[in-house]
Length: 346
Image (cartoon, rainbow, N blue to C red; front, side):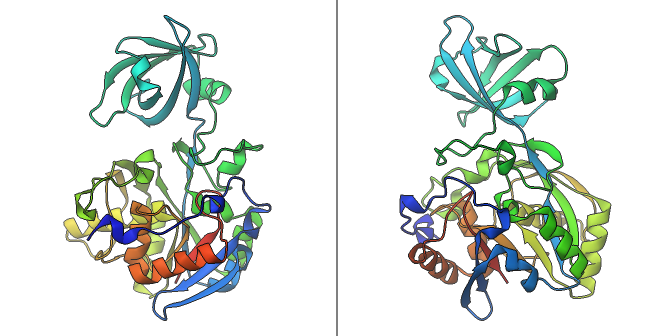
């Protein structure tokens, strides 16, 4: 299976630069994987498509203001640091831009020295390891100095930083938002619960590895970056009961999919028949041929050509149907990527 098999033409003007208001006024494409049909609606109508007893799985991760703008201590040259993954209390894996400007043991000053970062090492993948020193609580310093790490394809400044955060975000740790969840309002979630839809939460801290371009020619040669995930007892109990009773489990976003299917992988490895609470790191790579164990349907956004994300949705609905849906989305001027429109695969 070749990466080229997941390519499509995407006009640049369809890449959403700003979010729509209200959140649930984005468009919604409904793709029926069994019937092969494609319909058009608006996200607020998702309440008509979900049934009492459905289990809707949300990723409760919260994006941290991970983008830090500083200067090199020795020269005053501008340095940008993006926090990717916390390895220890004050040790982070980061991206440095421009990377060649900073050498091992050199320091970067942020906020005139309120926060200092010293480069410890350079990893094989080009990322860096940096140690930080500061006074007080790191999270409070970061809230003061950091900026929301918008994807590079978004070039318009975001007026409200919380707009790149889901309304149900709780646990800080992501370098990018689980963007399928950006369409939900608190009112919509309340209405779904009133209807009888069960809402459960999982956690996967989104790293940038998920969004990195696939550089191999063959799909199976690509290696995913590991991300931290956790599923707690209450969620496990509700999902196990729903599966026993034949009710649908619907993931909101590819991160929720990867969390649930990572737990299912552990379940199979232990010879268990049901999920159990789990916490750890996952580099699961889902592409066509994968047999889903937990999820029945998916709410997602429109993804990059040739990306691991379009491979994941193709594994659920079939490559031909997904590419047909994406081509229709282009023709119908759907908005793509983080602030774009949504797709419901049923």
